[in-house]
Image (cartoon, rainbow, N blue to C red; front, side, top):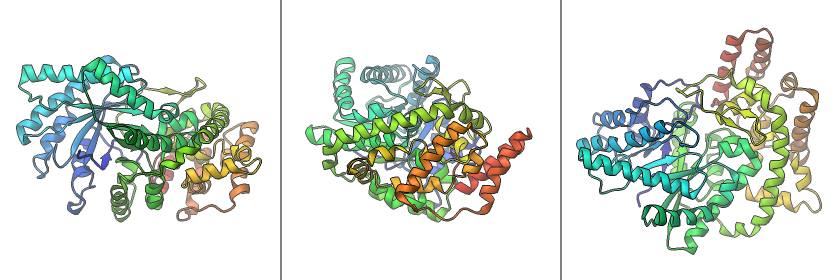
Length: 488
């Protein structure tokens, strides 16, 4: 199978604001080769999840490609992320499937290809749900073929996106269940599976440590599953620049490839494309493309029982602290600009039931309060270090990027600012997290030093809020993001 390496997405994590009209030209730039000044991706996600994307955007990208000597379906794929009907309106779900299928009429007309070969279902929760959506796609494809002369020789296949640690840790069982469900419910015998695992929502719900362990375990288990069967899995990893969202950043590109070995496709999100110097961007995506498809060390699964215990202990500590921080994060997130046309009705809740913003605004809010998100719950290190420290050693070997995750977030943290946002008890929880990291690891590696202006801006954001100068607070939050190289 010709599996794409680099999937350009429409995540609102850059400081650049895009209209829906801008996104058509953006898509073309994303899939143009690097040597032609493009961004060198071979797959473009058109995103409808919680987003006010026009239904004709897929067709518009196909039609625009005519002027650039690139062929959708051969040089690049267009892969829509559709709304999950359990979380969003069912009409939007059905309309986006229809938009994806009918877009292939135009791709066949102009290029004699199918630009859309896959569709992504976010927040996938069960094999039956995935099988039902696959059946729905086939029904729509059959209808369009019968009524509008679409050649339907190639089924548009569904990519399930799993976004919680529990699913990631049982991904092998889920894929096997999906394989059986597709046979029973759809009559579809599949031998190849593209499975998407996302870091961001898992991290918000379970914390950085648990979500990182689970994602890596998912990659290992997908490779082990295909070794034990006659089938193949092609993992897609969804990660952004901040450590909490995966730390796919130019300053750790080699370490990132090594840490997440086993992926076949990586999401290249907006901040990496638009808030990264061109030479660094090119070097990063070339490195990521070069590193795809490498078999990970499956012997690491021998330690899965210990790793699962570590993950749930870390998640427990994180959940207690995020419950105390939730209202502060939600307040600050309302000051973070939206850089894409999103639907305000689409929200998520924490495990505790409290409302939290989506991952990008979650991270941006915490950084703007003076706190690096991966540090929340880090005092679990003390428990892991008890006895002979074996559990801590296991964690650090399993997550080789972890020290740089913490080091990066430490150098963006200012406890003097953070203290002004929260009550004393919450502050003490976080201070203890930070002191524990420093006590056990001392000086941790960081990218280049931040300018002094960064910390002045942190103070100015808080002062502006106290003075009810919200517009200034919002402007300074963007300036902070520009210095970091990502919004959240």
